[in-house]
Image 1 (cartoon, rainbow, N blue to C red):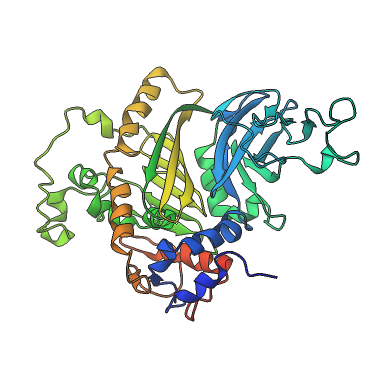
Image 2 (image 1 turned 30 degrees about the horizontal axis):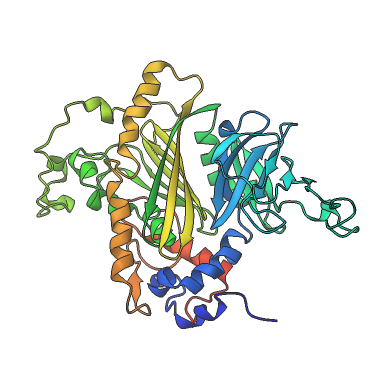
Length: 426
């Protein structure tokens, strides 16, 4: 019995603090760690976000996604049921479906034309019995034993989740009350997909999850936010976590105070950013039309391990994280509005979509920051990052925006799934 791929890599690095306030750089760069993550994280006891029901509304509709680095088909069967199938033919392992999305009655592999129905059942094998009694498969070949691999699927308010693991608890329990509420908040009525953005980043996927759980960078890295007071660190905001610390909600209830209100004591003195010297030609870009019963104007809900639900003002989206290797990942963002939006609101959402994505006015720097870190830590992988804003110790809700605490929550849960004992040799 051999050890799982990557298991030996865990002995190369140490988490010197049990609260994960020190992260070894090697956990971001080591390809053996990445291999182990595929089994213990993405194929482990977690729910991965897959797609929206609104993306596959009709029987036969499908989309190609990825869970970790595993290609997956998400589709709606003829009876309306939802299925997630590994996009790998049970014959020779080729990708079965190659179109990114569409509508079909069956999924047919182009290699040898094996075909599968929308539940993953193998229904067709050309020349299974050979020709005139010559060739073909053995007489005892049973198609029922060679279906596409299936994931368990659950939905919540039209958001589709999947897991490879039979032991994963029900979705409601996995999300917990706070984050079940966040899913239902965003998807409180039928949605309409407005479009997609896709970004490839040459860095490790966990540097991006760190970034999502680090409100501290928003008012320092993103010059647009600082300049126009969208998310100044002196504003009202914070972070919420679940009982395990694995999920995080970064929130703000107002745009933040002006530079004059902050003054030199606000922490921005000497940054030379000229906060008040620029004006928007079209201020409607930043206008928020209240549409939720709460006062949140910014809510980014990070769900362990592959999704972020985004509300930036009236810009709504789901970001899906797709790791490709230890050194590369993709972010696929699905932008949406609600079915009852009028034309003016739809135009407003599309205008505000310029704030997000690979060239977004408040997020273009995120990909660059990830790559800056990834390149700089290529050597000395046994050294550590410092994760201490907000203090050490237990992971709890934060009532301020200057905190790394939610990042530590991610890593504590990550270590649990990976079998790492933080505070000792990993």
